[in-house]
Image (cartoon, rainbow, N blue to C red):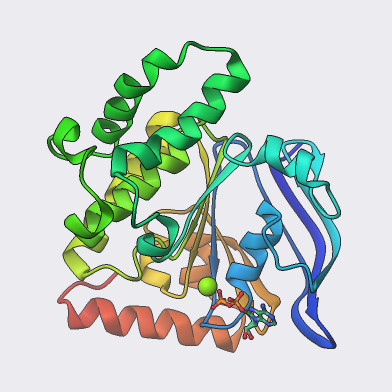
Length: 266
Ligand SMILES: Nc1ncnc2c1ncn2[C@@H]1O[C@H](COP(=O)(O)OP(=O)(O)O)[C@@H](O)[C@H]1O
Ligand SMILES: [Mg+2]
C-alpha cells in the first residue's frame, strides 16, 4: 500500500472547482513533484492532505495517508497524523513562525508534543532542539536558539521551519514552494538540504512548485496540474524528454530556456 494515495480528489469553493478528480500516489521513500502555474490548486491539495482546508471548502474523493482516511476525518485523527505521518514546510517561513517566540522555543513545541505522546522526560528537549538545528545546518545552534525570527535571514528561518517539520520524524514531508520566497543562492542551499534530509532520514517527499527545473532535480515522479486537473503524470525523466501535452511542453521549453540562459542545458 502506498504511503499517500490520493484518489478522485475534488475540492470546491461554492460552485467553483479548485481541484477536479485528482489522483496520484507516493510510495514510502518516494518523491513526487506537483507542478503547475500559480492558482492551479497545488496548495489546496497540500492543505487537503493535512486537513488544513478552511471549513467552507468542500472536499470529496479519498486521501489515504499512512492507511488512514483523511477526507472527513476528525480533528483528533488529523492531530495524530500531523507531524508524524506527514509534516509540511510552507513557502513563507515568516508566516509559519511566531514572531514573538525564540527559534529554539518554536522548535521545542512539536518536540514537546512528541515527548508527551511517548511519555519521555522533557529534560531532553533542549538537547534535541540543538540536535535538530544542527541537522538543518544552522550555525551556532545554542546562540541561534535564543534568537527571534526577525533577527535571522530568510534562509535561516526556512531552516527553522524545516527543523520543526522534522521534529516528530514524519514519514512524508510536504514542501509547498519551500524556496520560492528565497534568493537564488539560498534557494539552491535549501533545496540541497531538503534533498539530503529526505535521503538520510528515509522520508517520502511531495514537492510542490510552479518551477519545473527546481522540481526536476529533487523528485522521481511528477504530476502536472492545470486549473485543478492533472494533465500529465509519470517519471520525471520521461515527462521532460517527451511531454505529451502542450501545457507540459510549454513548461519544459521555459525550463530549457532558463537553463540555457544560465549557460547550462540538459
Ligand atoms: N479560501 C479560499 N476560498 C476560495 N478559493 C480559494 C481559497 N484559497 C484559494 N482559492 C482559490 O483556489 C485556487 C487554487 O489555489 P492554490 O491551491 O492556492 O493555488 P497554487 O498553490 O497552485 O498557486 C485559486 O484559484 C485560488 O484563488
Ligand atoms: Mg501555492
